Length: 317
Image (cartoon, rainbow, N blue to C red; front, top):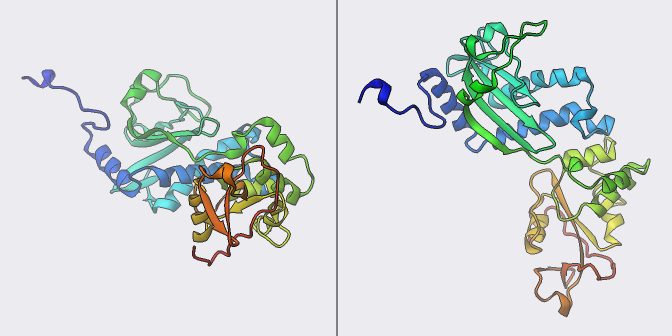
């Protein structure tokens, strides 16, 4: 068999030792990509600045803010993974210069002339699709489109995107909840001028789904937004009268969510659900024992009744 008869490298493999070294390092620091995805989620939320603006949709950003997204992704990835500064590119990874390029539009990475011959970490994320990708490519001039903007930056020809060595391709981006609930629910949530009333409506309408701290911050638009969730006149107190529990990320609350077969809140998350005293009609449903009674998720035709008190964060069930 001659060299020309040998099969090419398989998926995720290439004949570029430096690229493979950088790829191995990135996969070691985030094997499942979740740390990368979290940085992307946090960066998008940082741009939206929901606590101040109430925004939750990328399309509502100003053009200058969208342009700044790539810089923020670059900075936040460096903070998260402690990449060194590159000599001529953004990062120094395993002693190798690597440039970082982000685009909300797949294939829209803007490559500067000085990146030709260097490795580029190419990142794409789409908040509406809740998907993201990251791959590495050593830039070759002939793989770039001829047209250029005033900064002389070029894009990668579509037929050469297959040369990108993907680390994570079309992976799941943590959901931007407010983009993915019915428009009627969004309208009802944001209808009130009161931050507390908006939060109450959020937990009333969005049940049995994880609600992140950033969503709470965006809806409340108040600096003491976490206080607005808790008891003592927060959403927990207000909605308890309607039979709605709001479980947070404490061990005791997670145990209740697990007992009711709900999604378990992760760090900084909440899950709400309406419960009733368990009766014969609920015998096939998961139940939890609170306030000396058995409780189950309410059926649609169960009349609203006060929910039990949730245990404190320090309680162990």
